Length: 143
Length: 303
Image (cartoon, rainbow over all chains, first blue to last red; front, side):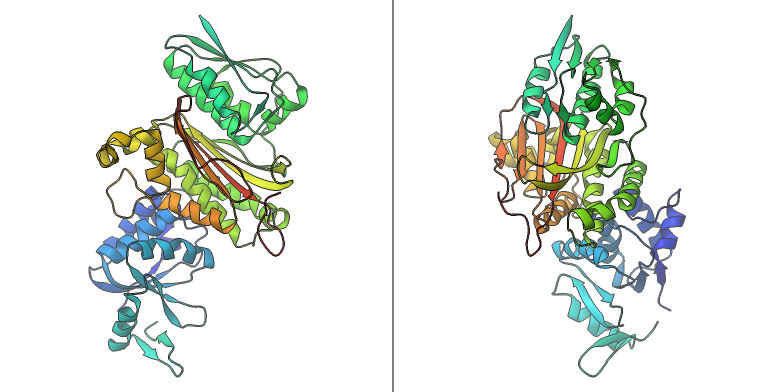
């Protein structure tokens, strides 16, 4: 079973006060530590950003980059806005890391460094968690 | 003994060094009188910088004095900008100060607001998203999606205080017509603290690498241009890099003053210098971000 992480829900559990924005290092650290407690190392996980307002670079690094670097094997992000992508992409690219991102039309694509993304997509297909469709697009099938 | 520190009549980033020079002449134990009675205008940068000076002066000696602007319109504006709400805790204020609450008006997107902890940054980001969205898109011509980037830049600027200053600071955001440079509207974010400054913050990890060149200018260069941080964590240093990217996209300007140096990423519409060293010393760090109104079919061009 693939863990599905609702980031907005974790944010509410991790910090006191009702926040919808993922900003500041301490907030990012609290959210990541909350996620890590439920997440086995080397896993494939889905992280849903629906309902998250502003995501700053510090939180993008503290949550997404650190999970990819230290905890998960493949991280699939969904519910991203363009602004979320703008925060996550340079942080991952700068660290030579990548995640997969599910577009609103369901197609998966790499986000971050260009090098690792094809291998991440191949791994999901090999594990039958995603399938190739005519035209070459790849969609997540294990939702 | 009381030493007079004159507040420039037009108090902004350009006149700040004149203010810092007067401040730097003070010696420990002297009581300072910040004289703003002749002030005609102050930018957000001037207002938060004055608060930082007040905090630093209080640390060095007796609670400083502040003479409020004599002009009723000016003092009223400072009050609406939230300045006196914060100044009351730092200065012994003299002069007629209206008991006005910080404004909810189009120019003051965020009144002078203290930043001491991560919770304050959350509050600032939440407020600016509620208030700035319409201004940024309708008045500055920014893509509505740019509002979130603006909030990100603001968040990272404020976090600089929380993470590095070793003390609290202030932030203010205003929109106004910038006749001097552009003859169009700009949004200005100003963040100031009287903390340890960039050189002190980065010294343990960077001083050796720079050798004899190490100083305030080298520290600012390391932080803003090279993206280094005092933390050895590989993901650190993202904030200023992100601010630079955002401002490059909207032809904005960033300038940071710390200690005796000032660094700027200068857009083509401005004639500021990229790096100044040997300035009058001033405690902490002062950050200025300017985002100009966009012209249809392209960014702002030099007038």
